[in-house]
Length: 199
Image (tube, rainbow, N blue to C red; front, side, top):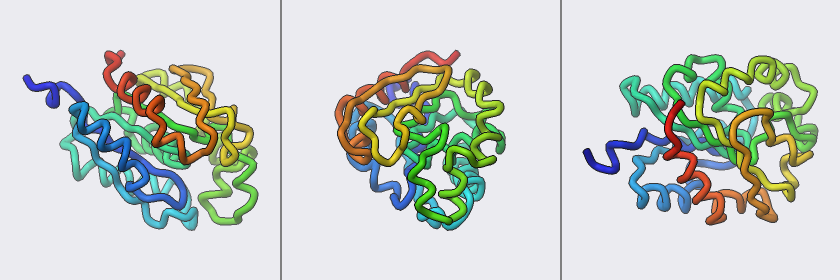
């Protein structure tokens, strides 16, 4: 069996106001390491629809690239919450084996108060959407879960919002939110997490 066939298909899920292209450097790195990498474009990407609607898009996309086989997800910022909804509410828990979030506002970000758009409102620290997801977040223990974050994040405030009470936690001290995706330390951490044996 080839090195490629031993690895799950990998789906990259971007954040707000981004497209899949934000992962270009990381995707190239991971493809060179033997992964079959997919990156979708969530539409709209600006928060104008709820994250639950974007999660439905993610689910449909995964359905088009897989036939029910195990997959892994790497998600950036808002994409981490979109992916969590897919995993926790739309049955993704039965297909996803490894789940890595990068600078995701698992406990909300005060920056979300700057917008009234539905997707942003759902990322506020006091919003019921996040509280509901966090009420049974422990189901993510069934996956190999990793959270990567930087204490210098000015988009995820407080930066510790990216922490979860379980799974693997890795701090990459990048100075700016978007740099997390192009920092070689992040890419190497992602590659390491993706070869962790599935529980």
